[in-house]
View 1 (cartoon, rainbow, N blue to C red):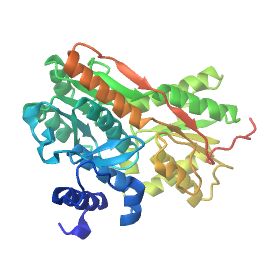
View 2: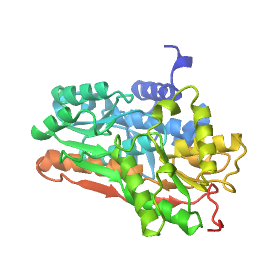
View 3: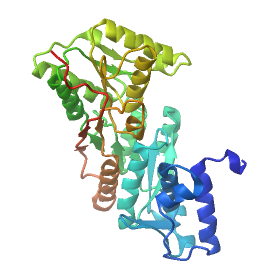
View 4: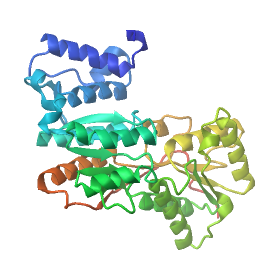
Length: 372
């Protein structure tokens, strides 16, 4: 692969790695900061951060919160590449991108570093079969624990349950298994959606749609958000109307004609008298925003939109999206803490669901002077 065809973070990673190996950066020497690297290479801070995370993961540097990144001593002898050491914990993710997943990785890495463990990243690319291969094979390679972001808790139940029965340390993030008592660290999705719907009702909205490309039964994080939406409506004396609930249209959404599909959905919402939309996540919220703008529906004058996650894109669009922020860093850190406790104190402990609080982030996509 040519240098030009490599991901930008990979180019930064390789060049810094070479400088460390050659001795250009000495042991304990501080590397350029994320901001400095971003300026040097003409990339975003997220890209430079990814390079540093990978360098830390592979044992070349260590990072101090609030200080920076430093060359690790005896980097060539790090046990991160020696599965027999028993010091490796693997994180299985459905994809690797900016925003939240980097938060998971950084939170886990920061904690594990203090305990002498190393983190490896494995990506399933939303393929349940590939995820299962990781679940089956990583323990055989000497990995001592797994942090799993499941493709869906409807998939690979056999592999997860086998690990649980074999007392293998496993913690899930983002989602949890209803019928397997493995540890999990998730956002308080119910409270986040309840808060979002309540805020919209307080602003005067009465016909609020819930929109999710994912089927409610497929991912419990989305299901819990739906439950929070319904409870907020009921607690405020509003009916739960099925025609305002749109979900399970992923095939249409990811189709080449997905833009036209979302535009038709927005038209339907407006025709049904909807004045506000609570979207499954920020990316969908942004697509709804842009589709509304394309067909002449003003946001927030005609349609208010709330997302979920607080991804970077939510504040860098034509109309910044009001959203519910997840604390991805704390989810990753807490999952790593539980994994270490399971490894060091016994797998019979700490099998529970940990919910991390969320936060309301108010921006310009919601109109707060709507008349009831």
